[in-house]
Length: 207
Image (cartoon, helix red, strand yellow):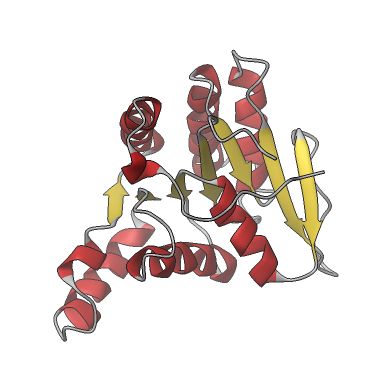
């Protein structure tokens, strides 16, 4: 079984944003900071922002026990697992992959992305809403999420289709330095044994 004492951050984001882009470098920097703190990262294992996270973690890693995970999905048009992943697993179904993300992660960062990134964010959000997992931070990085949150306030929140407590589970930040502050605070609470930041899911063994 996986070590339950490890703190892990899932980083979701687009496969279409590559090295040299400012967002790629932001995600790489965030993962580098997490690596220096001895915090594990979990990504989809592919190119783009997933590669940025796995790459940054390897660059910043101070604790050899800290690992970078890649949970890839079989797709006919997708590249393979990036070269910076320490522990990898491939999935046939998005549903199984999403559940493994949840079983591994104590916090979630959502960088800019498309349909897949939206799926990962909303799935995490719903599991918390229905208390299938404990409350963990969902940190939305960048301006693209501001419009989404404005829509949530204007429609489902105003129409009472969600509760204010549901909306408060989402944290919007301008950049990865602000994201890191939230994650570091969460890690400190986790290290104190604060159960508000642990998952109810059982943990899977990754080969």
